[in-house]
Length: 180
View 1 (cartoon, helix red, strand yellow):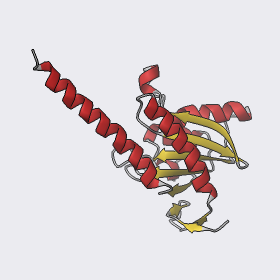
View 2 (cartoon, one colour):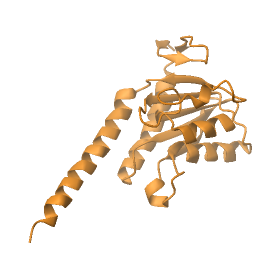
View 3 (cartoon, helix red, strand yellow):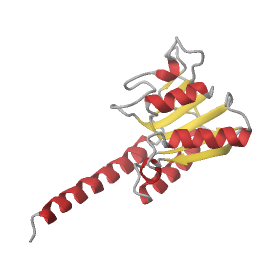
């Protein structure tokens, strides 16, 4: 495969090469995000990959489950741990359409994930470098490699579509209140 340059940090700030495999698996995560969009959830998707096989999938389900922890990454990591019959996911890579929040980044550290790959940054809640850098915190017992910007436009596009739809609905609902 032809290597593609992306911003990748291994904790020491070094730039590494990545392969087209990252894009292949990110497309799988995007399928999960599209499922979330169809369910009227914030469109974030995630897949766990072990030895080039998807072993876990997840998308946001906070609204449908009424569970603030039902993020794509948490659901995906749980599925991967069940598949491997182990909570230690030391050779697993996690592909997320959007940068994991601090809660999810903490779960990835606890699971001993090898690498996290995400599409778009989350400048409000990001836990992999945007706001916090939980996954590379030197005080913690585990750190992982981070790859960002993989299929970023596609991932951000789904979020923009979702929130645009929400804003239009809110505007329509407001205007209906004043109709007699």
